[in-house]
Length: 445
Image (cartoon, rainbow, N blue to C red):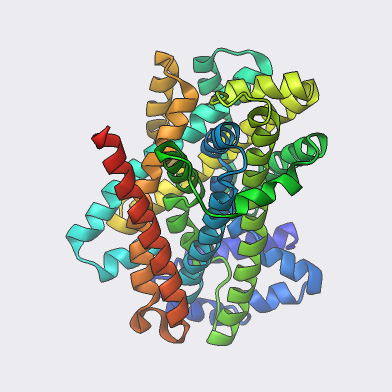
């Protein structure tokens, strides 16, 4: 990694350069007589590679937010291992989508919202911005409520005061971003590690879940309610706001001077995605496996709330397991809410060239969550509904991503291969079909 002085120097360079195109970034780098990638590689094989990782881990945090807790534990308790394949498929979709988003930033030097504004009509760009803001609020609802529930489970603090405390901590995490992207990445990574090790401990204590999960690898459903939960799982896994964010995290993080350097960065972007999203997938899968082992096999299929899952862990496994669950939930809510607010800023700046102070945005987007907490609405139901709503926003992020990455005038020689475009199109089609079914099921009953 960089020494502090080197990190500060590069961040000053990046913050003052702000290239509108890749070409402008080339001029800025050549002016100082070196390349960022060359400097990183000179740090040594291991340290240089580690320094190139990070953006996918920030994006991955959104894939293990409290909405995932709600949908995965509900699915495991009610249907056992039936929907294991949904989590695996959703994670594979996420890897493809996030890599394409990272590629957009590396190759073009711009983020996805900026490209949408440039290549689509003004009406389309503004429409995409409006729906992206609505999706951001739904995202924030899940993350904020989840963190508040985590505080409540840990310390017994009522939900509304827990929500206010969550706001203060989230502000502190966001403040790190103002002092440099690496500090923000490390803080997010530390919170993600808490979630990972919390569920790793749960898996070790709850033995015998992995062999039984093999039965869930065969794609199938068990009635309309299982389809609704599958949509919730996908909505909680493939997150629209981080599709926009990932391109912004990579667009000028390491300026490049030619296509050779861009190819090098893309190799590391793939590795970053595999590791970051792979860890998120393991965490999501462990949630469902634990719920299936503890609750479904014991006939407690009605465990459909985070509070009930916490209580069940304490009853069947012990207080340490319940504590690990609550800590993981709190860390998940804090980290994902900070990432969500950061993504909202990127969306506004890219689509309409407007911005508001990050902390003001944080204050505005937390209002729906505070309303839910103040009214005493069912927290887990609110989380599941928010994730289903998110699944409706996914195509509005994915369709522009696919359309732009298949255009040679945008991506140059890094344009998608036909197989990549076909795979991404299938992903979008599956999500759209699932959402149409949800609409029919919801209003036909």
